[in-house]
Length: 144
Image (cartoon, rainbow, N blue to C red; front, side):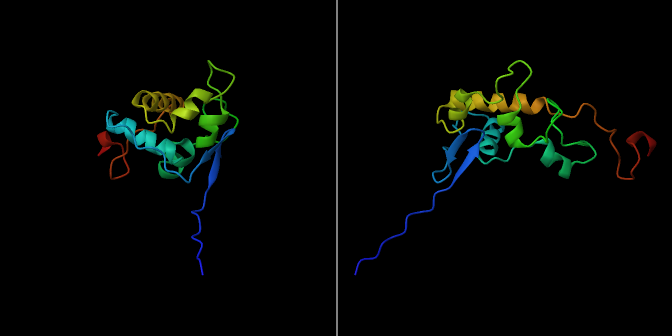
């Protein structure tokens, strides 16, 4: 009697118009990347970047809205920021096709390119103003 070994499940997810195979893990960040670059690349690969949607739950005093600061028409999810919302200087698409392949590249230059592209997108999502800092008493530091 022969036993068939089940094949591992395969899962795909869509990032914009492209299907990414999640059954094989993405390559690790290249050792030449800085810690911030490596962390950002892993967050991109895991679909866990710091977006206003996430930030609003963690820092509601700073991120008072989760609406995209660029288009003002949709929630600023990772999918929207990276794949759907075009930056002001490129009205055709948010994530160029060349960047899509760089997410899973092993080349340090490619990895840096995609990280810088995403950091530029996220910089446009920073709140315009931040509330004044509040001390432990709930009052601004100079009032304590």
